[in-house]
Amino acid sequence: MTKLSIPEMSCGHCKASVEKAVAAVDADAKIDVDLENRTVSITSSLDEAALIGAIKEGGYESSPA
Image 1 (cartoon, rainbow, N blue to C red):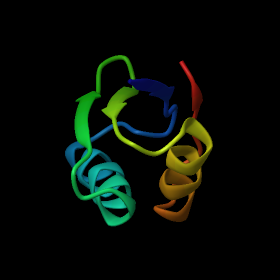
Image 2: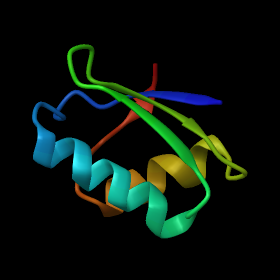
Image 3: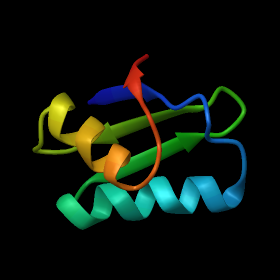
């Protein structure tokens, strides 16, 4: 599991955008978003760098939490 901090994620639209960005690169990923703490936990076959890149393509900066 990869846990990432996404400081700019603050609403339901942000959550949906992050989920869509991850699903675009790994449709089987399990995504758990915590809006209050602005983190996302992702269970995926992809490595952390690939997930960070996908989220960046979706418009959000992220880093390991």
